[in-house]
Every structure is written in structure tokens, then in C-alpha cells.
Image 1: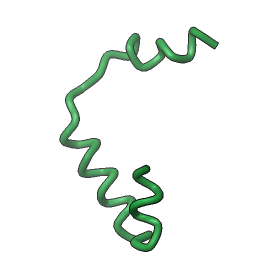
Image 2: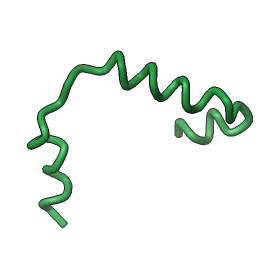
Image 3: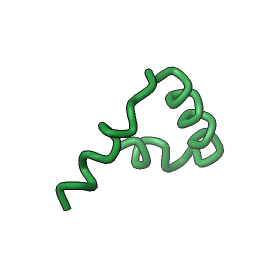
Image 4: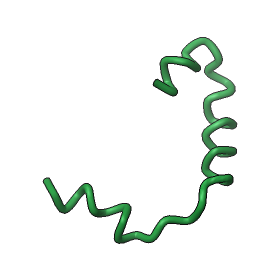
Length: 39
């Protein structure tokens, strides 16, 4: 969805992703790797 919405503003994709990443709360590594252990 994000990539589709920004398909015509390629130069804004990187900056927007950096801003969203900086605003998001930290997440423990265990939660990040949960999806990998199910495969």
C-alpha cells in the first residue's frame, strides 16, 4: 500500500520511511523474529 501510494514521488519514499521509523517505538528483537520462526 505504501509503495503504491508513493509510486509517483520516488524521491519522497526514503525520507518518509526514515521519518516513520524514527517516530515508531522501539521493538524487541524477539517480536521482530517471531514471524521468522513460524516458517
